[in-house]
Image (tube, rainbow, N blue to C red):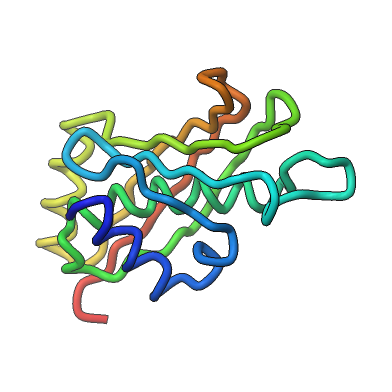
Length: 145
């Protein structure tokens, strides 16, 4: 899925991504990179609202799975943790990719065999090439639901 295709999909299917002005810089086998500007995601302290930062990280990790599964399963997030390391004072990015080939293979086998599987994916939030946050999400994929 090209960056343009993914961005269109996110904006049409997840309206929050449009409201946040999310842009897809990279999408493919190497992973996903999403960006968002400060203005639509600002809080009362002139920094990025924590919910916007967590949403961008969730979207990045979710998009990795969506692309890898080619939309063949319904994906939901079951659990997430978000650690903010410093305030985000401008445009920011979220990067995510499949880290563990063995875990991915187990996930695919389980999904095929049981119609349901779980996988934990990380995402890193960055501003100006500096890490500003760490996300971990546990996603569930469901066939035929």
